[in-house]
Image 1 (cartoon, rainbow, N blue to C red):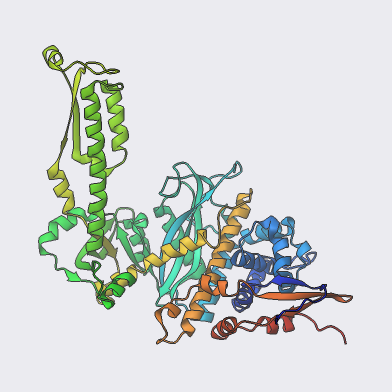
Image 2 (spheres, rainbow, N blue to C red):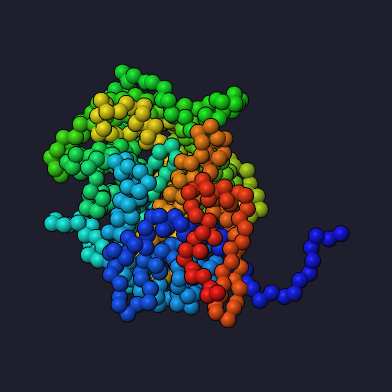
Length: 580
């Protein structure tokens, strides 16, 4: 007998509240709308505050990234219009655009205010920040984008409405960006501990700027808006310079930065024989698992050697006492050698093919054509430096001694030869797996081993950037105004803070003896748990009546862990009861 019965057609609609069940209460606890409104005075003629409109737009990106033109449809389909008390038809492009324009004028101040509130409300120290820039790509024409003055001026630090939007322009090519692609760079400052990363503050720079400019501007904005009393700034080699260390030192702050190996290789060679190496305690999660499970897979490790050193800043004429921490990685050594050998094999095979082609007298074997082929083969490969080649003219006697050319070929006039410099390879192999960190943190504050463990948390910053451009879909950006593009990027930084704060709150609530999988629960998993939570909308003569449905066991348990009210509790406070 069936457990299902056919009923009459209902006049009710079902909308998917989904992830808003956790996003909305978190945005309220973060005071997002109130913070925005403190910086953006209400227009007496406006029906809705900028804080309400922009916090809803943040929720839209967290719930289901969508173009601005589709926000109204999303608000109706998700019941966001009921939670924010803004009718969906009011969420048009003009209203969203006006709020983004207003937000642009106070973007740094609002972002900093939120960071300070989150720091106080959720117990997040701002004394250690990992900085990592990434690029955001654009398509189409941005003819109104133009270069801007930098953040740092002689007499002030430009921000908010005193700073133009970052210049959307051609930047340097990377693994995932072709050379000459339109871009800007966005740098994020992230706090990291055992609960994972939490991005808190950020900034944008022109698409043709480098990491030195980015980190200098970011530090200036941190000092102006966050005003930390203590700060240790972690960053990668693209941001390293003596000037960067000098700036932090002058303000009484500290730096930990990986450095270009070639800049510190002479120092390494000078002290190589006397360095005292110790195995680092840091192990990646994968390496920890291999040891715990007694896996047959390779057990990699790091070794550290510390050297006291002094750098000199030519601009400030300042000596900077520091420690150079030389790092040896068995895994990096293997990877570098495998990649190099792959390049060597590819170049050797290509040269052998050219050699055979020249010897056979095939087409495109005159010296100029061969030079172009070799240049294309070598490209930017580092292994090209191990090879030397030449085209030697053949004498008439040597040409006559050659066998008759085959069909389609001609009698060769040159001999192509190449050599492989084994000594150059062995010289480079001596540095495989080595790298350098430079820090101004004194030895009596933290050991090199503990500092290295903290630095390796920089990997989380890269993970944050991937989320920034992935699930939050900060690109593609369908806005033609550079001001609105910049405003949306800053709003997405706030959404990113929300995303990782949700993850942190859950992990903090998990017992220490819980399974590893539960202790590493991600925001994506949490949001997915609510991907199918619906509300019923009944159409009555008095308007639309919203009726919550029953939570699943997993959804209810998750809300209890987070300390959030249920959708029923939230809606009962937000919406009036129908008259009896």
